[in-house]
Length: 263
Image (cartoon, rainbow, N blue to C red; front, side, top):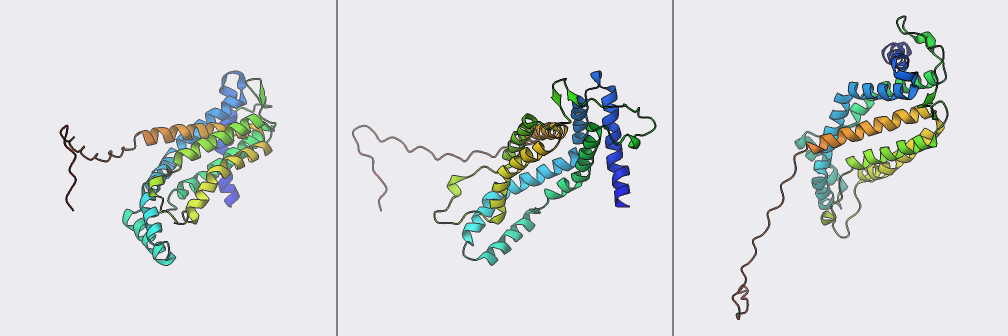
């Protein structure tokens, strides 16, 4: 039952759209069809990815206060956890709120992966709608240069690098001034986030090497679109006002020593 719903709602529409785009794009270039379907999918999922960005921004804004609580209760983990949860409740922020939009996107991403897998191997054409023309065979060459049915380490590398770029944009900037001498590192979640910053790009590169270049091309384009979305989103983010500067003390008259405060 679940497989039938997945096939009817996610896989079959995406596969048919991929084949239709291949038929209508000039030169019948499967690479251009993949780029176009990635853009369409990004537009469809835009509300979910935007919500994920908003949740991430809210979490980043809380980082200094979370760090202060960790330092304040560094010797009492129970009080620290209670204070952190109270902060989340008062600010109406959940540390897992950015995960739900990503989970919603997963069926679409799996369906696109299966559509690419079938299309690049000239299979699955029995899933075509009656009004979508049967292409016979699909030429896997992209711009006549890259075989998207074969593994492509340059595309996999570019996908990994853009994944790193995307992740670094979301990473909160370190604040050396907030570092307390002798304090422990951030909690386990922060440590995992730091590891994931570099682990995800490496995994993207490794996975990209194991699958056809068409999947790496999709990943590359999706990352670039996400980077652009994040840049526009953070451009609209209100800037924090600069801290007021202290007034400069008046210079004492020439020939007189400066007089300090009487203690």
